[in-house]
Length: 254
Image (tube, rainbow, N blue to C red):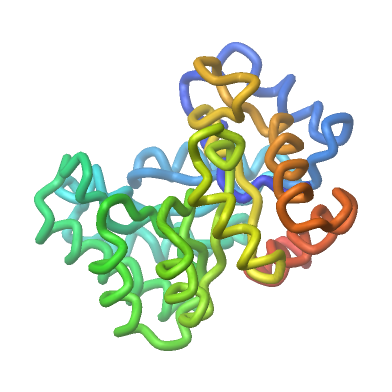
C-alpha cells in the first residue's frame, strides 16, 4: 500500500516515529508521501525523508498558514525542489471553514503554489474545505496541472469536476465513518483509476480507532472499505492505487 498523505514529522510521533517507519514492510506500506504545512515544517518533513528511503515529501504552505507565507515563497520552494525526495508541492489550497487566514490571502498563496508547481513540473496536493467551487475555478486557470484533492469530502458532482481536470481524489479514514454515505457514493461511482489512499495521520483515523492517533498501518481499513464499495479484491485495490501514486508522484519510481 501507499499512504499518499502523512505528517509523520509532527510531534504526535516523537516517541515512536522510527519504530513506525521501520515497521512499514511488516505493515504492508511500500512508501509514504510526508506533507509539510509551512516552510519550517516542510524542512522538517524533508529532513525525515532524507533519512528513510521509503519516505518522500511534499513542500508548501497550508491555507491555515497562508497569512504567514513569506514574500520569497517561490524561491524557498525552488530550493526545496532541488532534493530528489521532493515529489509534490503542498499541501496548499483553500479552507473557508475555519478561515484561519483571510480568504483573499488564501487565494493568492494557492495561485502562487500552482504557478511554482507548473514551473517545477510537480503535482500539487490540494486541501479544500467549504471552498470546492472557488478551488475548482482557480485550478481551471492552470490547464494540465496534475495533483490530488486530498481528503476529498464533497459529492459526486464535484468529484467529477475535479476528475475532468485530471486530478486524483485522496480517500482516507472518513470513508469508514457510518454517516459518511456521500463519500462512499463517490468511491462507488468513481472507481479506482484516479483514487489515492491516504491516512492524513495523525488525524482522521478509521472508525475502529476514532479518538486515537492515526498511523500508516491503519491504511488497510481504508483499502478494505474501498474494496467493498468497488467490488474489486483488496489485492487489486492495492495494485491500482499504488500504480496511481507512482504515476502521479513520478520520482518515487526512479
